[in-house]
Amino acid sequence: MNQHKTVLLLPLAVMVLLFVFGYMQFTTDEAISHLDLQEHTTLNSIADGDRQSVEWQWERYPEGTLFGDDYIEIAFPEGVEVEEAYVELTSRNEVIYSVRDWFETGDNRIAIPFPNRMIEQDLYGPSGEVIVTFNEEVPDQISVYYVHTWMDVDVSKSDGPSLEERFEDAGMINYWRIGE
Image 1 (cartoon, helix red, strand yellow):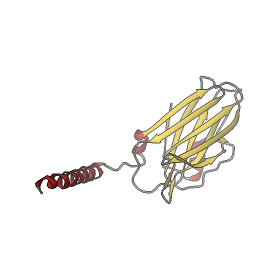
Image 2 (spheres, rainbow, N blue to C red):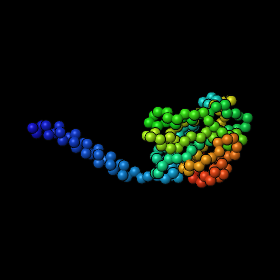
Image 3 (tube, rainbow, N blue to C red):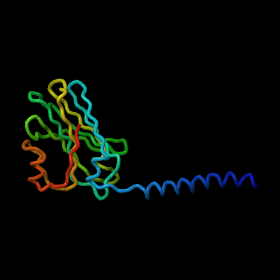
């Protein structure tokens, strides 16, 4: 009978330890604000021929709710033209949102918008990829920015002024920009 105690107690002890360490991990993980999220967002940009790929990933999630739109903004040299741009958002390693959409935000600059929200169990916005196809090989002078907002206001998505001017016109005060 003593031999069977080990077989029963060892898995039970492992389960208790896993529970305790898991609980400690969740309770010591401090929530971050939307403003602090910029320090926990990775942005990678890769040029391949006439295509520019931009990927982002939030390493942590901000406290509160997700809403509003985020943007990938790309600035490129004069004479270069955008032929196509699309965004794919992923959640749990599956594409949950895909759209071909962009608008001009000044001379030689475009923005690709995407939603930032939670629908059922899918998080829209924390990870994704934008692919932009140009009319020629991607030049070295491209700048890529990730713009995060956490206000649900209607920002114009027609060709026109910079994102900052659009945000000001719409009353958007909660946003930040990171770039490479």
